[in-house]
Image (tube, rainbow, N blue to C red; front, side, top):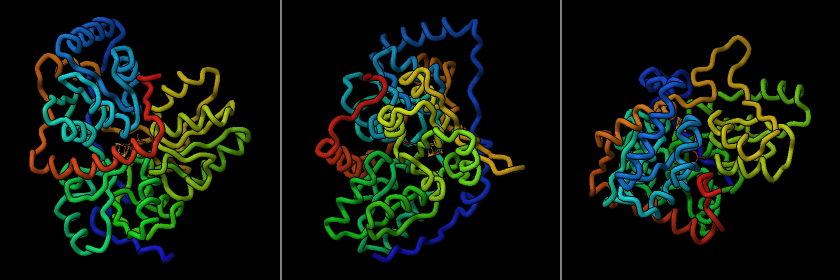
Length: 361
Ligand code: 13P
Ligand code: SF4
């Protein structure tokens, strides 16, 4: 089947340099203050009937805290499901803004807090709702499938929301029904899904600043130095990096692949935060971050999402003490966005055996 020509919209800067300067790191935590901070956060979570839902890319302190307090550390699909199913009145999302918005859309009656509301995502930033609506209007014959890494308004315009762990299955399902797909915003994820499903897909043009920087030539060089290492790649990475992978998957998918493949050494092309969970699950195994820069070049994000890094213990305690940084979603937009998210969750329930994060291990 012919591949739809990717179209150029705007935000060409996402193919090159993106100014990630607005992503301010949180206040540093000293070893002396950490125990008291952790104890205070635990107290506040309990007193507020709050649960901490963290992504694998946030600082290990937050990942450990989420697990130790009955929350979860997981990929974006499981974060959505966990926050939805958990009975706590307040959901504290340690991740990026779209994750907080998804939690709020699914649970309008709950209070959703985030350590820093400025935690964006380059994919979300590169897909403004008004431009996206024009793109959809120009292609009314296509089913609109959007990645979770988008605003509530973009989800409200979509038929389906997908995350990286279920995108392939959902697009294959639509393809089997003879449907053509409009996919946004990640061009690499879209191209990968197009390749494995053979679906007719028209892509938006955006990329993740972290994964876009992984380099195939340097990865091949690294593989020569570690001939027995298996390569695990997140599908937001460029196609020539994905081609070198022994396994391609979401963050949870990458952990599962490492367990399944049973190697002694892995080269991992995703945010370095995931290595914390991988080392915890597979002690004694060597994990190496995939290279992000060509010779002499400088990477910007260097395998660490600058927005995920905005989550810290100080700003987490601050929101728990003050109630600041609550996520609000326009109810009309939220109601429409919920349709595309719920469609994915229903599909996941029917087609994925178990959705688990590290908090459930
Ligand atoms: P996952 O759903 O695989 O955790 O991906 C979220 C994300 O933002 C990856 O960059
Ligand atoms: Fe967005 Fe990339 Fe950061 Fe994930 S790692 S939140 S896709 S910028």
